[in-house]
Length: 85
Length: 159
Image (cartoon, rainbow over all chains, first blue to last red):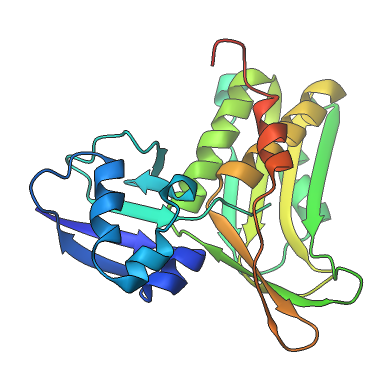
């Protein structure tokens, strides 16, 4: 199944695109798995996801933790800690 | 009844008029005894900052503010609540965010507005980038531990 990945702020700048559609390989079950897999996709991903612990994640526009299962996710967003308000 | 309160949430590029937003909440009502507003403005950091660029996650920004506002409605006896958050380029002195909370007695409105701002800072998907007055790009504003701690103090025991 194809999943839409969206990036914001410096995660977007380092990866070099605002979003992309990806086919997740078998075995990618959790957010942590996804981050590990993305990090292996090239230098720009390695650069953006160097410290996975600081990356915040939303599935279908709701905050989730890194242990969350991603089955059924239409849209997964990766971004740094928020600085609004 | 508190359950009838529907928070008014807007994420927009345009500025807002604080007096007009208060009027929208209170018009035609005689049961509101307290209105607390908080507005957040762009600082110039002693002349070093030319502007802030606010990036947001369209859709989730509205949804997350809605979830935070719904929690405020659940926790305090409010009669109205409005939240406006701007995005795009914002100059020093200009408005960034507005929270208006209305209640019968002041304590609920004060606390709800405070809670909303603490949660907005750490959970609403907005990111600030600095444009420096000397023309250089200042980079992304870092999240402060103090903001997370401020949000944490509203957690109920057992959470």
